[in-house]
Amino acid sequence: GAVVSQHPSRVICKSGTSVKIECRSLDFQATTMFWYRQFPKQSLMLMATSNEGSKATYEQGVEKDKFLINHASLTLSTLTVTSAHPEDSSFYICSAKHRDRGDEQYFGPGTRLTVT
Amino acid sequence: LAKTTQPISMDSYEGQEVNITCSHNNIATNDYITWYQQFPSQGPRFIIQGYKTKVTNEVASLFIPADRKSSTLSLPRVSLSDTAVYYCLVAPNPGNTPLVFGKGTRLSVIA
Image 1 (tube, rainbow over the protein chains, first blue to last red):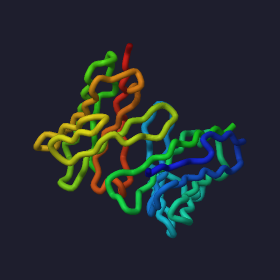
Image 2 (cartoon, one colour):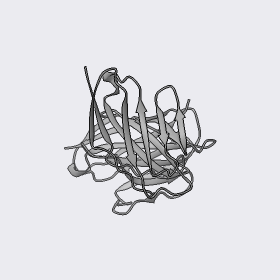
Image 3 (cartoon, helix red, strand yellow):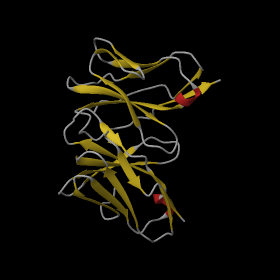
Image 4 (tube, rainbow over the protein chains, first blue to last red):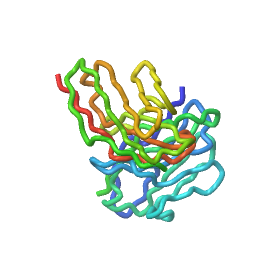
């Protein structure tokens, strides 16, 4: 149990376009989801915290108008990278907090975004 | 959140026990210690979590001294498939807290 999926697993888009990444908790309800970004050979960096039914909280330095986060249900959060540029190319990972458990976060498999 | 320090990399031969130590001198009273494993191009995978003393599961053991300023992840009899980056994290309520990942330890298991 406690599986998190992400879609797509990898995406290539042209500079200036937008791309949406979905994060789903498959077998549990997630009141909170977190979005991380990981550049090659680097660690995960928290981008934002997404709470169901409310606005996301962004970390310092993360543009909220560029990285749109929507958490419309207890099983789905989406991250939309708007007007993507090559420097946005990265590995995007989400994690979810199980509504009924407080011990660990469950991570998705990640989405590889390449902007050409 | 308490900062963690780990060795950047470690090498081990197959079949050996591997111990990775993490320093967290500023750990708070309500902080838990959690270890994650990450393979290339995959999301982190939970390994083990503890608060004090020793915790063991089917994958690893976690040793935490009384002062809790460090912790050691012990992987028994590693195999090539254990080659990965291992992250030590310290946080209160780790299921509901944004996690701060350090640089992690890159473990390379050699045949």
